[in-house]
Amino acid sequence: MPFLLPKKVTQETALQLQKEGLLNSPNLQSIDCSALKDFDSTVLTVLLAWQKKLKFEGKSISIEHAPEKLKVLAGVYGVAVLLGL
Image (cartoon, rainbow, N blue to C red; front, top):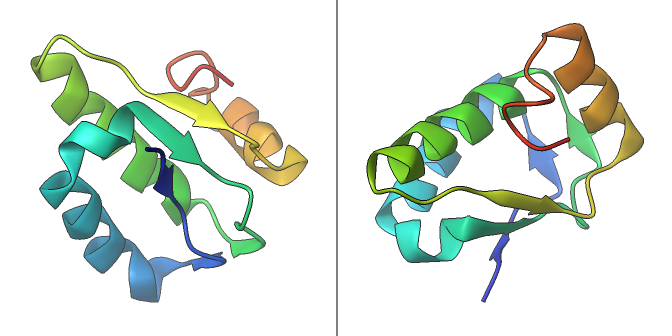
């Protein structure tokens, strides 16, 4: 079952989301971004933290339904390849 990102991920919500994801790490191998509409670059920090956790476990994340803005941000910050975007 994929981990569903919320509609909004900003500095105000990122830390709680990161913690929630880490508590559900088995579901982090597949991250569904279909609801993600209102976000800033903070979402990249969350995704990278999850990626780091899974990599330590010998796993990786797969990001599904990534909005174009997320792909652009990942490219600008140089983490698109790390996140598979």
